[in-house]
Image (cartoon, rainbow, N blue to C red):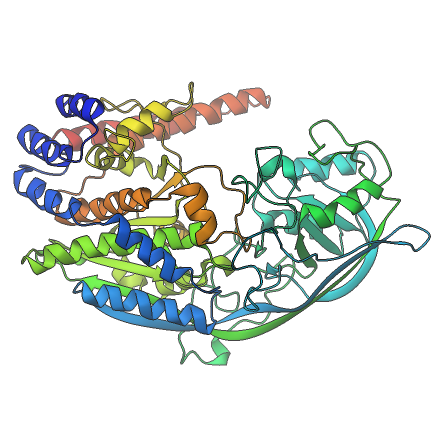
Amino acid sequence: MKLAGCRVLALLVFTAPCILAQSSAQAASQTVFGYGNFSAQAKIEEKFLAVPDANLAGQHLKTLTAEPHMAATPEDHKTAEYVAQKFRAAGLDTEIVPYRVLMNQPKTVRVEAYDPSGHLLMSGPAPEHIDGDPGQDNPRVVMPFNGSSGSGNVTGEVVYANYGRLEDFNQLAAQHIDLHGKIALIRYGINFRGVKVYLAEQRGAIGVLLYSDPQDDGYFKGDAYPIGPWRPETAVQRGSVQFLFKYSGDPETPGVPSTLDLPDSARIHDYVGLHGDLPSIISIPISYHDAAPILRALKGAAVPQGWQGALPFSYHVGPGGVGVHLISDQDYQRRIIWNVVGTVKGSTYPDELVVAGNHRDAWVYGAVDPSSGTAAMLEAVHGVGALLKQGWRPKRTIMFCSWDAEEEGLIGSTEWVEQHGNELQNAVAYFNVDVAVAGSDFGASAVPSLKEFVRDITRAVPSPLGGTVYQQWKLRQPAGNKSTSSTVPGDDVHMGDMGSGSDFTPFLQHAGVPSTDIGSGGPYGVYHSTFDDYQWYTANADPHFEYLQEMARVLGLETLRMADADLLPLDYAVYAHEVSGYISEARRKAVDAGMSSLDFTPAEAAAARFSSAAQKTRAR
Ligand SMILES: [Zn+2]
């Protein structure tokens, strides 16, 4: 392959100068997809790659995580001003864009459990606490709660519903366990928490307790924080239980931007319940410290295979043995949130938009989620600023966006996409980053047309482990996890498909903009707890901020290479190949389901036409 010489060199000597060698190699090869002659762009990329700075990224992270900064709080506004200041310093045309959106903040959250004789088994929530964490006693740390939870005061028997998947609820139903009037105790993991609550409400539960089982991100995985990176006993995963699979954003304004001047008459009022966007039942997240006494006391049948977690006793499904009393008082108000948008106007195709984005709001300190993303984006912007100061202009318009209220329901990005639907018809790509750095394992997901583009970008960025990001990605991917879409030489590193749950959702699934999502992963057990802070980050994820630098380079290079391309590097040959794969899979499932008479011929013929058109386009 075109970079083979440099790859070998990089693996042997692990030196930064390979950045230069790589760019020269790419320039010499002149085969970069989307470019007729890559040599001028190679020089621009070389200059860019030299700028993102690990120490500066670490300083951004420290500043951004100095205070809890939940959406719509004064501390959140302070982070918006910090980001805006850095955007302006880089020369971006910058504005802070406010919206007024409906969100809850907790007034009271209580959980009590009793045995059948009325003896108190637990009363919580217990405060999140470990030895030696500097931020846990800050009064601005919000008590654990679920965004979009209902308010209420309910008492009921408990039923354990494993992960709260459809098959889990079906299994309970098969055992004639009725959830009407019950409280469902559900462990986090596998599916989105809003799905768990939706299904529990559908089955008649009057409340939900969501807990983190140590099997999924606690001591079963390894040492808990502060000794290791995994979830400690009292740490709680906050999070939204909005019905995101229906629509994201402000629940009162589906399809409409919640600008400050939006009249009340433009808002809907019927958004709560199974037909709407928010659950009507209450949902409370708890730690395994608080879940253990409930699970231990629970009677009824032994759990089905696969339902046992890592707490040191046998789990039962219930009901019986324990009842709980839940109080949730949620303060719903229309609150102001702030996106920050920085623009560099394109010189040749100013209407064509290349958008990169990351959310800024955090449930608490949010060192990994999302401040690592923001710190990386700020250093990418730093690199773009250095090019601007040398007189460079991108061919297409580049926008860097710092979204607010992602945690509550992708709200800032969704409202912005709703406001700019017309301009976004000309958006050529959206590059997301959220949990940018939790460790050293690079990973990415993308629409099929951008998979090879992302691989190409990672071939041009050095890894702190030596060689390129691409090489380390390839070396470290699990055996048997190879990509099946091998239409392109070198297409051998697995890349995920786009799901949902971060700010690419409105771009990809509402506006149809080709998107990618990148991150560097690792053992990360403090997700959405107070312990996702600067101390955890430097102890476990990235002590020298080298991976922030790596992610800044990858994100920045994605935007530069897309913005300057002669032809958009969207590879529909890979897309067509994946479409054929989906059709084959559907055919296989149809046969398995006894529907072998279903005729897939027209779909296959259409996929073949798509494939041949894509091959012709790519060959030009
Ligand atoms: Zn996030």
